[in-house]
Image (cartoon, rainbow, N blue to C red):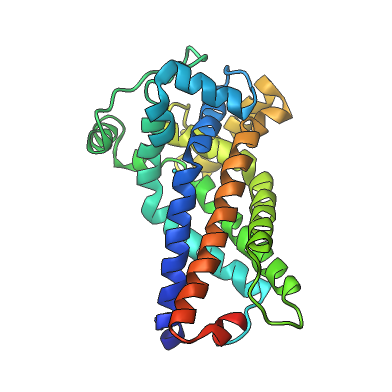
Length: 284
């Protein structure tokens, strides 16, 4: 088991996935900025994604919009592996996402007058101010919904691997670029739509400007806070308020995932071909 996990083959897959993910996230990061504005600023009108991006560029400039994101596997194992990796990822990276969220929203022209502006000079200053003003625990705001959201990549990879197996059923072959792009997009679209209300709450919690429940139990407090935020959003904006910014999120995540899977498959394929293991790659 350990030999399979830490093999050279596993390293190739990991590096291929990482390179594909970084490239795809960088290309489509402005779409995530647009989505975040719609989720947090409840008074901002839900316009089309191009309109939101144009608005951000007009009000804040282009730079900030672009800068300031051995045996055959089975669907069950794909899901479990995706969830396990997601939990570890959440616990380690949540502080970075909290700072990321606040820096992206800094300087925004909010339509909601109740939102207090922040003033961070950079990443380290944001960490220091959050710890000083709100305590170390604030760096993990949104952890509970984030843990629930590990189902997102789990569902995504399960659908992706399932569709890939169907396309290669009976004939082990390398999928075309178009096939990889399409099934990657479909998998991410389904996972994103199902979990989007929780992503909205996650963004609000990371931003830090919300009324926290006073329950002694941390778990009960988190559950009550999530329940109150969901209820307030529905009361103020209706059910569609929970899906505000979904268009931008789908564009960003679907295109990112599709490009990531495409790059991953191509990088892994080329690497195995150079290693003389192309037959092994086709049997995946």
